[in-house]
Length: 298
Ligand code: CAA
Image 1: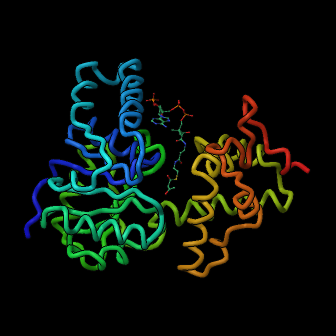
Image 2: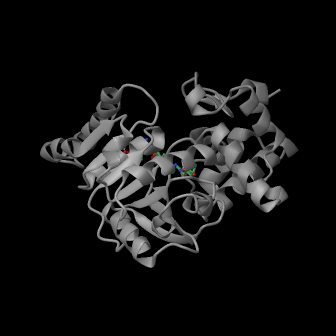
Image 3: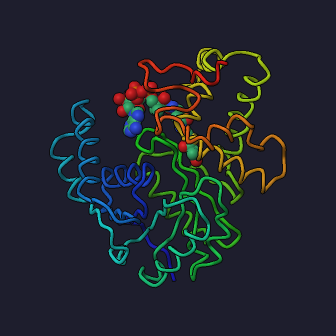
């Protein structure tokens, strides 16, 4: 089965990442079908994309006519069957291998033989998913960063079975989104998370060692290394459950202590303090501006 140019895109999973990815693909001109994997309000999701495009128009980054055209290219549904005609599927559902494999199994029966499948997983194995499908040669990792509309990088992860023509077609589509593709061999965490997760973990160790306070470590990295966010703000932004699971997956895969989740991360996660999304993590977002979580100052 030859791989052709990607002309339409399906995104499975309408969480923060899936929604952001669909926003980007529809804006870039690809007819996009966004499938909400769990029951819920698809109109509300479309309204959120409309709101994001509206901000682009307000900032002069998009013409009103282009906004309307982009919205016209975006179909939001809960029906997996509507992915039947797409050239590329980008899966962005729960970070659980079994759940993802089950979704790809269903998609194998729905999508055309030439369609390319990809996963936006952060730290699960692309090979483990690819071998469970009928199209391992047309299966890749396509890893966007959060927030997807703002972050330029997309890691494209290939396995031992990936057809170079599929890699080429996906790289071209990613470039057409205005993103920068970087090719990486399938390996837990790819490039960015293998470097970024130990960095956030190291910051937690420095804090628990008493080197400096949480906000001073963040201030140091913003002003001393020109990072847009310090490591604690970033961890809260990503979500401490996500950081915990990434660290756990990396530790299980490589067995290196630098990936082991520190106790403070485990305790915040166990107590439901997951960062921005729960309004409390390393910082308390109930206050404006956010202040360090009082429980971590005692
Ligand atoms: N959606 C869309 N666009 C967004 C956005 C969002 N949620 N948040 C910010 N932006 C855009 C803004 O529109 C703005 O664009 P313009 O300058 O062109 O107008 C730009 O990003 C900057 O935004 P702001 O001025 O509002 O805010 P900021 O300067 O504080 O930037 C930020 C916000 C882009 C999030 C910046 O702080 C940043 O880059 N932080 C680091 C984020 C990061 O490292 N992400 C990777 C996380 S790791 C990951 O994702 C991997 C994984 O597997 C979990």
